[in-house]
Structure formats: structure tokens, C-alpha cells
Image (tube, rainbow, N blue to C red; front, side):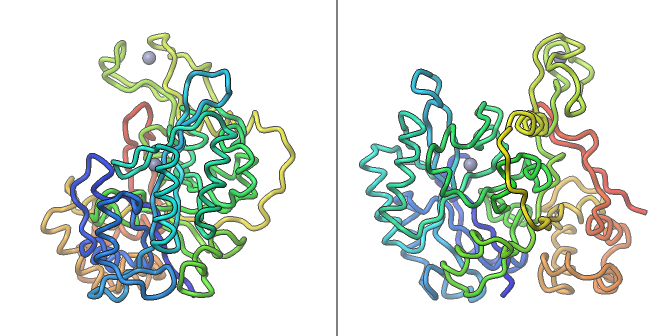
Length: 417
Ligand SMILES: [Zn+2]
Ligand SMILES: [Zn+2]
């Protein structure tokens, strides 16, 4: 059975976001075509209580709202682990890790464990302070001992707080995760990287990749902005868990184009001291790390961090056997807005055309799967420039030029014929 999953999100308790309403999430899931969604923040006491009150378990580890028969949830959260890389070092490094839980007994068990570790659990992401990579490994092993079926995987690998991010100057994952590295089967690509980039890092080639939205809102351009297509043997927690950890059950990931990300490239943005009129973007793999205009060190981008890991990881690796299937996508509301020449994705006309497109194609994921000729005839009621943009995105005729760098998003260019 083929299902679309988006297994990393946040509730309204993760700071900087409004209240998240599960009914609104379920409505957006149906429009997008997401079958299973991670609840986010499921160890936060207030959110955990709300999840228990509103959701009913309809299959082992699968939770649903009574009035939304197609929206399924899995208990999920993200924990921030912080530790110095070397016992002698004073600087702590933080790494975000996603956890999937089979039921509320296990969320209770891990909540107890967090208390033992005196972890901060007052915001959406619990924060666990540890003394060394050995302690990081012991903590993760204690989680698995307390809750055996829990699945843990490193979140958004290349962002500053991801395991390989620019804040974490490691060469191998074990420099942070210690011996627990041997249990890691899966890594999240995140918005700032895609499978092609991660596959260049030698130790990633033997891991499975998952792509999730990491969203903090029920909006149409947030839920499912990245997601993963899985082949599951059963629609329950263990069916999904097995598919994520076995080779070849991950059929395809849908990804942001990493060039969109604010830290894809290396450079200095316009507006910095010495850059009143123009920013400067340095092609990955070139330059000496210093700005040719102002002479100061450049803000190093994700792609250059990937190239650094490619250079420094010297151990022999088993190459991933199968080619990973993935596709770059832009949320449909954003494509429609571009087609209409509008900046806002929540304008009345944009939402009206979105509804028309979904009625013609069932949901957004289904829309992207139709052959171009059929898609064209299904979208016959949409304005021609909007259809042209949708077809161009489906055919991957879009890029971000210049790409994002030093805190600036990349500029979207859709190549309409
Ligand atoms: Zn995170
Ligand atoms: Zn500069």
C-alpha cells in the first residue's frame, strides 16, 4: 500500500506560532493528500493532554479525529540534545532529533525519563543537556529501553542545528551521537538539502532518507511542503516504522529545491557593512572563504558544508544500492500565485483557483502525478498562465537564481515555454 507521510511538525507550543487546531490540520491534509501526519510536540504536557482528549486510536499507533476519517496521526516530537563534542571543550553543540512513538504509554515513559535528566520540557521541543557524546548515546539508548518501538532520527541534517550543520563542525555523526550512531537508519533531508546533496556525503549513502515539512502551521503552503511516499505492508505504527527503516520501502521523497533556502550558498548579502548596494554570492567550491569585496569571512552555505564533508570523510563506505527517487516541488498555492502575478498565497482568487484545481484532481499530491496532457485537460477551467506555471513546475522547469545565501531566500524563476 502506497501512502504519503509528513512526520515532523510542531504545535503552538514551539514558540513563535499561533495555536494549531487539529481539525484545521486534518482539513489541509485532505486537500494536500497527506495520509499520515506527525502530531509534533507530543511530550509537551498541555499538547499531550489535548491529543489524548481529541484523538482516538483506530489502528495500533494510528490516531484519528472522529469527523475526519482519512486524516491519520502518529505521535511525534523533536528533542534538542546539547553536549560538548570533546570532554575538554566548553562550547556545547545542539542537535535536533525527531522521535516517533507507538502510543501514549511510551510518551509517558519518555516524559518520566526527561524528568530524570532534568530536561526542560516547558516549550514544544524538550531540551536535554548532556556532558559528552557518550552521554548523548546513553540518553538515546535509555529512551529505547524505556520505549522499545520508538524511532529516532536526526532532523534537518544540514541546517545550522542539524547534525552536519554549520554550527556543528563534525566530520562523522559519531562525534556527537557516540555509539548510538550504529542504531541510526534514517536521516531527514530538511528544507535546505535534497537526496542528491546528502548522497554525496559518504556516511549518508547507507542511510534511508525521509523528507518532512517541519511545519508550524496548518496552512496550505506549510503542511506537506515536503513529504515522503512509502510502501507499507500495514497501515499501523509498525507498518510505517518498518517501511522507514527497510531499504526500498521509501518510494520517493518530495523536496524543496535547496537553492531556495536562506543558507544554500556562501556569500555576503546586500545591506551588510561594506555591501550597501550589492550582495555577493560565491559559487560553491570556489573562493578562499574571504569576501573579495569587504575582506571579512563569508557566511558559509550548506552546499560548501556538503563539499567539506565529501573531502573529509575518508572511511570506505557501502554505496547505496538503489538510486533514490525524489522530486523538487513548490506548494501549489505558491505556483498559482506566481501564475496570477500575485505576491500573497492567501488571496481570494488564489484560493478559489486552488479549490477548482483540487476538485478536478482530488488532492494536490494526485495533481502532480497526472501525465501533463491529462493534467492540462483537468485544469481547463484555470487561466492559461496559471496552468503553464503548474506544468513547468511539474516538469521541473524552475530554479532559484540567484540561490539563497547569507539569510536571503533564493529568487524563484519558473521557465514557462
Ligand atoms: Zn528542528
Ligand atoms: Zn563582504
